[in-house]
Length: 123
Image (cartoon, rainbow, N blue to C red; front, side):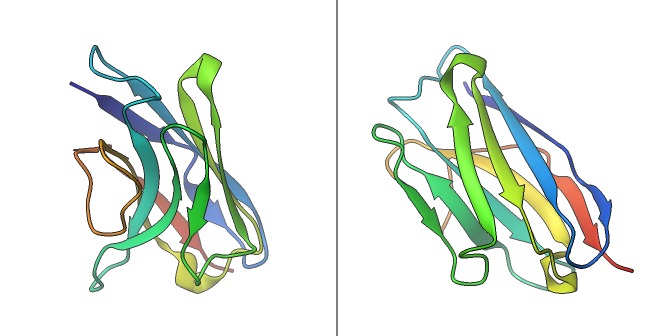
């Protein structure tokens, strides 16, 4: 089993920044076994993959909509993954989910999900 807990969401003005954190735990979790991704879902819209960090070499992948503004990183010692979000736009408003996938980074789903954290970009 893998448990994922997100934190760091909140209200921010357009152009501002936020850093989301995802704490990974559980008897089944190792960095060699799971890629960790961030997804988001806005009201009335489908879930969207945002960023992912691969399980072995830490390669990173981004959706076109956030490329150059968001950065995903991990701290293996702390069992944590972060999503640094800069130059935020109102269209970034969504619930953000951390997810673990046991094969490779995928925009289409994951094996384990966190509970989500709300990000609202508004003036």
